[in-house]
Image 1: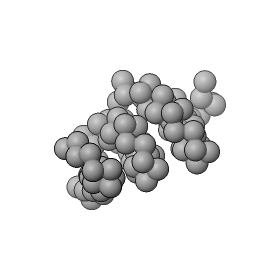
Image 2: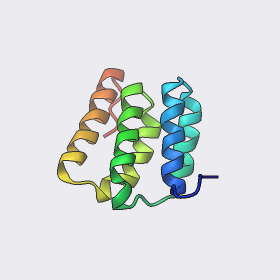
Image 3: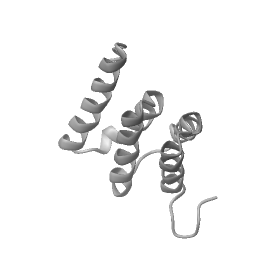
Image 4: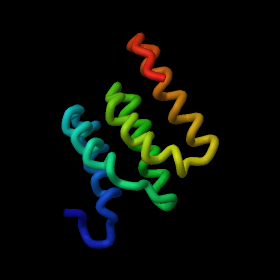
Length: 99
């Protein structure tokens, strides 16, 4: 459960970022799957975007895609370009085009 004053989705994103830093990629992906049914709200867009980019940087593309699907509808043009570029570059490194 999230601490008082912190939205549950934001708490999950923070746990996810911690899992990424610890190299626990499967755990981060599980959290992303849980968040897949959650709507990202504009006030939390920066947090969603930051964790999605961290996932892409760590090569955890399933998690990054799941978060991207939630945040892209509310992201501005610069955020959208940054996230889509990070995903595309990551998939290119893997030689596994997904888009």
